[in-house]
Length: 222
Picture (cartoon, one colour):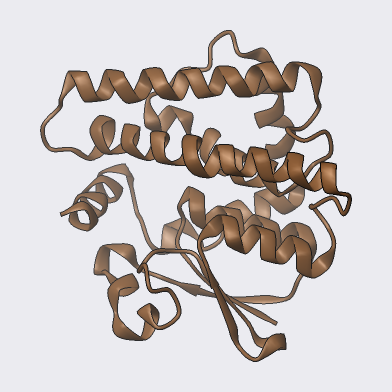
């Protein structure tokens, strides 16, 4: 049994989608970010960084894993699925996973901050992060022109990247002309496990509307 501590965010969806794809039994503990539950002492004992998601693997002595990328690797290696076993295949998945962790996630996160959450609109910052997100999307589109998925077969790299990229409208980043990326977004979004994982935890239980989401984000960023 896995215990999942999460919220309805791109990083949170990575873990819940992977758990659904891998058909692992798990229980959900919804963390209310706007209430700063992720900063409470009990949670910091599981995740010193005070972020989501975190998993606790009850099968191996309540072993805690934090950082979304590390969680995906742990679950892939635990099950032997969504992660190739051969050296080259594993490396390809890890390369694209690191591309998401070091590029897509941080850049889209900053685009969200300046485009959606910042009380003062700074055109230079908005343009800078929109342009960099678009550049990264073009890298993905070029890869997907020759591959069905990022590392040939569907993997944790696709889960990690899709969890962020499919929210491009919220970040204000257009994907016009990126037909291969659009195809990939739609194909992955149609997977039943992805749809189930995307709905965990139920957003309606935590965020009622876009204005509430923006207000909550501003509280966290202070």
